[in-house]
Image 1 (cartoon, rainbow, N blue to C red):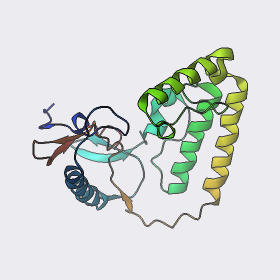
Image 2: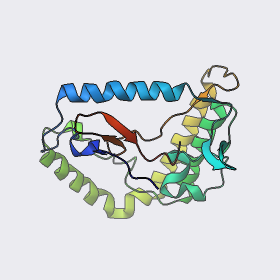
Image 3: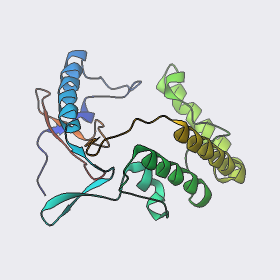
Length: 208
């Protein structure tokens, strides 16, 4: 395994409300311009199916989809269609299946329909936001609200509504070879830069 050159952008690009100094606007613009060029070049690499790249016999092939929506939070255990998919409609329908099966079978965590997690943008300071999150945690702990049947039912109903929406979407007909390559997690943790804020590499291509 090779070592990534440079250092992660997360060291200087801070989230909104962070008490630490953030990267200046010109440097951010420079990085985003580079990222746009990289993303555009990736989008020119086209495939005839939706799935994940896997190396086999010294070449790359499209295999079952390992997207975050199919794999994280224990969803890799679910028996759902995983592709490769020949249409966007099949792909989105599979994601909805992962969502609803999760609500029926797997443990729910963090989010709760009856008491949504506080949003940091709703609070003028990080201290007030963290205080609200603590109150939310105390509230949902009583009665195990996250894992109650009522909350699971709400998720299942939402999943059914999502499926109806997907089926009503007028998705464009896609010609063979028209699905682009993309990086599934372009976060500041996975973008490496040098001291002049030139992007040196992108890491974590596991779900590409």
